[in-house]
Length: 272
Image (spheres, rainbow, N blue to C red):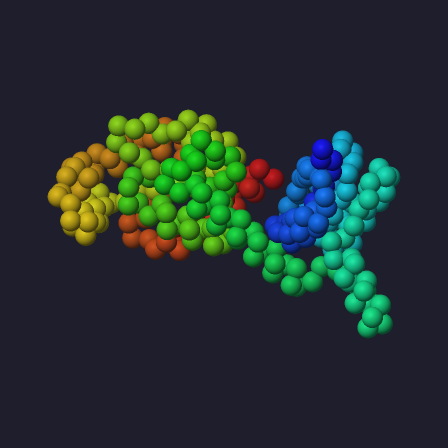
């Protein structure tokens, strides 16, 4: 019969380090079932009340990678008051190295920490974007920073990928004639929803070239009149929902992304 142990993992970055340490350590224990909770990107004292409240519910053991002095002290003192053991993930190794080489320990947030945080933020954004491309997981969009909506070949995917490389969680949902948009897009509250449009003549040319490359016959997909009607229908949806619209006809991916980033900044500034 296994014994259940509770682990609380608190990370200043993506949590991959302490997850790896925990997974390999628990593997050495016999007859245990693990219940764990991970908090990522913990940088502020304001995050401590929620974390400590969750720790108080199940107790267990806390492992963290926090080096910011004020946040680390708040976490460790809070755990001490709760009577819950709390350990810095690199503490054993750091202490042994310090003792062996007779050098002092100085835990602080370094430039390298900032680089790592930025790297992991971009990795998380890329994972999210890949998992929400072209309407995939369109019922789960509240974790997105931005959702791009547009007809086929409106550069939604490459724009999302570029945004993800900057650390922005971007999803995209296609507008397909005769197919209603998912409710999650229409009811989205947290993400910024942006409509992308393209000049119908330019779009028809792009689609025709795509069909030729696929050795497929031309159809309404590339017909100029049908494409123009698609774009008119798309614009009506954008206007009806009050979404900002970007015409990407003569804009590079970088330019469109810069406009989206500006919209995000303005939205966040208004919220603040």
